[in-house]
Image 1 (cartoon, rainbow, N blue to C red):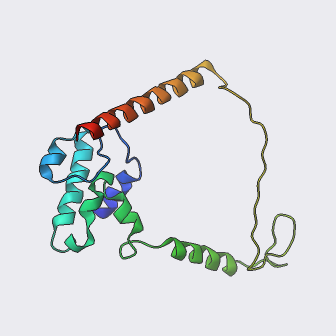
Image 2: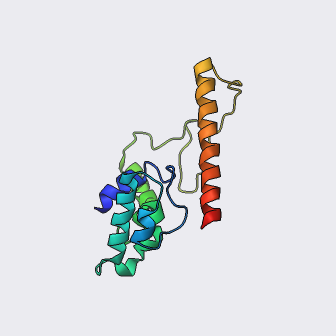
Length: 157
């Protein structure tokens, strides 16, 4: 079930009507103004948080985020960023290069090497087509509406 929640939580945690704070129970979930699918995901998070086997994990603190924070930050049920970094280092070191591993300029890469690549160039202003401009304006309007609704909901609670 956790994989199912994580799959959808990573798609969006700011869909219209989702709460910005943890919910206080099934009644609060029913009162939400989000889609039925999101209500079900929040309900499952709530149920997992109350289950005797998982209650000590405090999952109910993350119901409003569809369990996303818990599922991605828990060392017990996931990996750590340090573990991911170490796996990448180990993988790269296992690759064999005939002349040793080199940076883009042909210099040997050492443990202490910090490679920073940055190149800035002017890409232009505005939108290439009228349709792109209209899409940008529509997205901005939706974002403003979403923020306004969230502020009104926060004020009402």
